[in-house]
Length: 317
Length: 281
Image 1: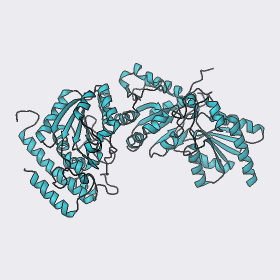
Image 2 (image 1 turned 45 degrees about the horizontal axis):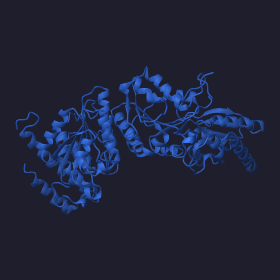
Image 3 (image 1 turned 180 degrees about the horizontal axis):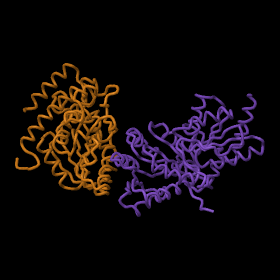
């Protein structure tokens, strides 16, 4: 049994591994413990640039490096990448379409004890609104490792959202291949409803689908690793075939995956959509699982919401 | 002149070029009906010296990887940069008349993907020196010997990010980065030191580990000498260029009202006349 890793650590370790045979990228670091890339400079002193506690300079400096045709990875907490350096990401990375990958770690409520100041629950909404930006979020360590390879080959502004704490692997390396902009069907129990998930809450959705199956509710689960550009085709197909959609994300329901899915469904194939996530509030300190329960984002709450939605769908038919 | 880095003929040629660029600036902003003449006119001698004498560039190859880089961090002064690029041969000077128009290659603030010769997108103040740090780091990484020049405004350095970048340049001991501050003393709502004091400027930069040169930013010989010294120091250096906002047009000089407004037809005629007379060549 492999060691269970946080998505951030899996991504960082894999990138370090790739760096040993691929010379074609550099790393810009702030002074944070993000994803293990703090150690990048020890092995590759020429390819690592320290920017200290100065995230705006981190991003604008990375843009300068990228303007000289370097592939740049920069790492900091999602809360700082998306908000302290928001304008630098928008105007100096996205607008000029520079080849900068922004690794935003410690995303969502899973940050736990650090509390609201450090829990990025708005970052997807912010990053998704920038033209030229691609936004991705792996569901487990296997997906995070595969994403590291894809990110090295990617050209353009990219935001990668990673979580702080280890989660059980859902995928195995032998059966997982990362594909840009493609939803992945993880559970296909039938056509009562579709759960569309991005990030580490995927396991909870899969568990909820198992529980629903026992009750005779046949759910599909899609892993929407790429939030932008959204796999609209998969969303529309889910709406048509199952007639009800639940979105699940460790993020505010305003502007993230839930909004992206709802926008597509409303435009192309209106069906009931229920968004699970943080409901216009800040986070707080506490055990992540406790926080998920408090915000209706645990397996039991997801199951209950799905049950309700299925009943609502049937009552309309 | 006994210096080998410029001759009296160079100075005369550059001063004549500066006259042309001033005319272009005023005419472009008049045609566009909007723009920033004050800070464009104060930057003319420096930008002229860079593009017509100092920088290692090739207008036929704007993407040449060994070229010197220039970042106009005070991006609103782009009419000066656009005029220099056009007159240097990066694109047809006839396009200067399209400034700020729909689908023009000349955006209201510099866009590295739309304008040949623009090395970095800029315009939101305070960001250019950070990008310059990144470019200087890239030169070192790839063992290239180009120089990165960044021009900032004196009002602009009220932005905190400038000082993050100043700190980083010193931390990384950058030898190939030169900042030039167009110290025209005026920002949009008045005198810089009435709005938010930036002085003592030289002391601030020295405290951040930079070498400091202070010059008259309208004296071509001083500009050329300072740029030469700054490069030969092989140490991050800032040139504090004392300038006059709106330089060359009497009714624009030292007046914050001309930070961001366009001359009308009558004012254009007067401005062109003054610029022509002011250029003694």
